[in-house]
Image 1 (cartoon, rainbow, N blue to C red):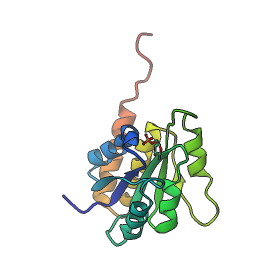
Image 2 (cartoon, rainbow, N blue to C red):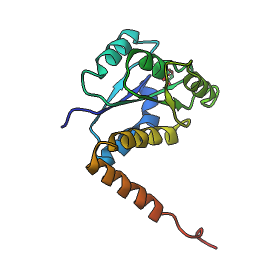
Image 3 (cartoon, helix red, strand yellow):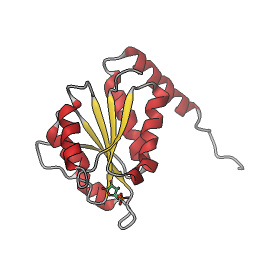
Image 4 (cartoon, rainbow, N blue to C red):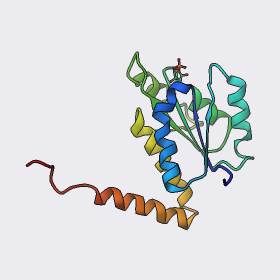
Length: 162
Ligand code: RP5
């Protein structure tokens, strides 16, 4: 297995149901990646260690999913220059609006690329990380183009049962 280029991290085991969609996209497109649970609140030392080691380990992007008071993406971004793509996980109490607002409204100087709430955001974060890597990898660019072409080809001209 090649060294991971993308790190998928999440605040809790409960986020995996959402974040597995990111891993599936990266598997499909052949992007080496790793998956870790790193909580800003429950394992802050693990968060710092992960972020501080990310660049030296060769990671090129981090996809970070969290819900509720979702500090994980922003704190990772504060501790590494590796681009961080934040996925707001849909929370039970506020349907993910808390997660979204916690992730999206970063102060100037510490950017987090924020995706949609829930599974669409997880998948799109993986696609965006792939697109970033594809700018310097022709093989990956070809696989991403083929994936997008297949998606386009799968859209019917008209809905069934008309
Ligand atoms: C956040 O709290 C996690 O990212 C998760 O979305 C949320 C709830 O975590 P659990 O109580 O399910 O572990 O830190």
